[in-house]
Amino acid sequence: MPKLAPPPPVTPESWRTLLALTAELAALAPWEFAYDRDVAGLIDPVTGEKRIGSVLGNAGQVFAIVIYRRAGLRWILSLLDDLPDDLEDLNQADGMDCLKVELVPKRELTKEDLTVLKSAAFKPAGKGAVWPQFRSADPGWHPWYINQAEADQLLADLPRLLAFYKMFEEYPELFLDHAPTDIPFLPVVLPGRPLSPNDIDWRPLLPPPDTDSQPFQPADENLDKLRSLKRLADSTFEFDCTFLEAGSFIENGRPCFGRFCLMVESRRGMVLGMSMQSGGLTPGEAAGRGLVESLLKAGCLPKQIVIGGSRFQNVLQPLCDTLHIRLTPASSLPALEQAVAFLGQQMAGRTP
Image (cartoon, rainbow, N blue to C red; front, side, top):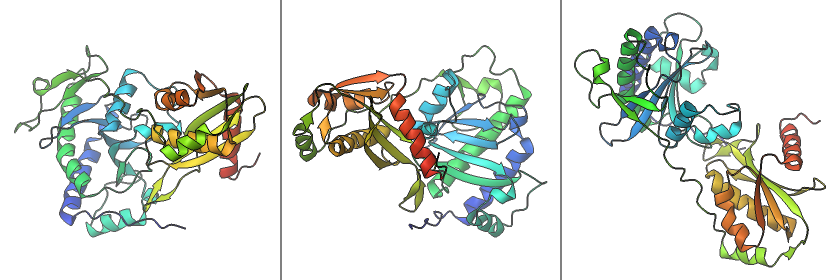
C-alpha cells in the first residue's frame, strides 16, 4: 500500500510566528460576532493576487479562518451569491482551493501536528477546541500540511485579517447596504494604527471564469478505435463522473479523491463501463477520459448519451458530435444514480 509522504518543511521561525498569530486569533474569537459571509478581500503585496478571507464558527462547530485562493475564489463568490443546494456533496471539493487555520480538540491532531507544536513549545489557553491545525486544500485532493510558500502566505494574510475582524467587532454594521458580492478589500499595506471603515475599498467581485470546461480531445489512437465501434440504432446510455465517499487513494504521497466515471444502459440499468480517474485531474479532463474508456469497454456507440445537468456538456459535446452521438443534459439519471449508490455502499463495506 502506498505510504503518505512526510509534511513539507517549514522553518521553526515561521511556525513560532504562525502560532503566535493563532493565539491572537483564539483570543479575538471572531466567530462569536462574524458569520462565514462576513468576508475580507486581500491583495498579495508581491504578486497582486486577490484572495478572500472568511471566518467559520458562528454555528459553534468549526472554529477557523479560511483563505480562499485561485479556484477557491469562484467557490466562495458563488457561495456568497447563491448558497448551493447540497454543501455535503463531495463534488464541492472541486472548489476547495484554500488555506485553513483551525482550532480543534487535541485528539484531532496528527502525530506530525503534535511534533510541530512540541518543537515550538506551544501551550494552549484553555481546554477543548484550542489546538491549532494548519491545512492546505487543493481541488480534488484531501486537505494536506502546508508548505513554506503557504506558510509565508499565512504570515502575510493573518495579521491583516486579524486587523479587519478587530475593526468589524467595533463596527458591526459594516456590511449593511452592500450586496453579497461586494467585497471589502483591505489596504495592501496596513496603516500604523487600527483599521477603520474609511480604509476599506469596496469592490464588486464576480466569480472568475471556469477554465476547467475546455473541450476534451482524445488521443488519435483512441478516436480511431471509437470510430470503429458498432453503432446501436436505438439506445441511450447514462454517464457521469463524480467523487464517491470511501473512493480515495494515495497519489504522490498525498490522499487524493477518486473521480469515478460510470456508464449505464438506461433501459436495463446494466453497467457498461467504469473507470477511476485521479482527483488531481480537472473534472472535465477526468470526464473525457472516463467517457472514452467507458465507450471502449462497452464496445459500441449509442444513439444518445444522457448526462446529469450541463456540467460536462461543453467538455464532451465536441467528442459526441464527432462520433454522431446526441448528448442530452438531464436533471436526473435514474439508472446511473442507482448504480452509483450501490457502488458507494460496496466501497464503504455496506453491502445492501
